[in-house]
Image (cartoon, rainbow, N blue to C red):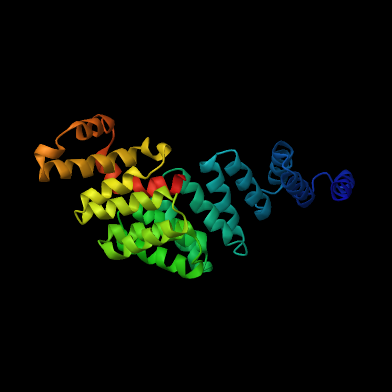
Length: 275
């Protein structure tokens, strides 16, 4: 295109101009030509290792290639060189989240929110990390703030409902799950949260009924099998003659090999974020 042609002509006159090389990399990246984008980005950084926008672009390319460690390093270098790109804190946080380094991820979500207090995705993803880390009250607060910014977000409502469940605020968790199901009766994540709440308040029969409404795909998930086992175990302990039967044995087999403590702690949030 015209822009690229002009940049190539300029590069012929000054082949060591890092700004021109960066701009070519940017153009190729915008077109989806990752290989060419990376080539010109590398050349720009060879000439000027502190070119902040080239570092940011390099980080984006590495992220797209699933080199999250390398991407995080590039984003951090770039934001340290230029405070005009605070969104790079969020990008770094996303890299650390992908790497499973939740504490490091939360540090960068915090930095993002210091610059942009109403950054919806940072608040929501921070809440997810907090839930996975067992910091339930802080997670609920972050989810509440996210919902204030975007009350139409289904994911924010799910995370808020889960935060309520984890904090023992069962009526609110149940209300939010029912609200989501009224909007979309096929919302399996809301069904799982509702079933988990019903199990906590010992309404096990209704929990079974809610679980039965889940899709076949969800019924093959670890969290579904874990919740079903939990519910049928409780029913069997309450009424051994009626419930110490095939269903309990069936789900006992299903949960073999599952880390039950991990499933209890983060099974629901993992299911929500993977949808």
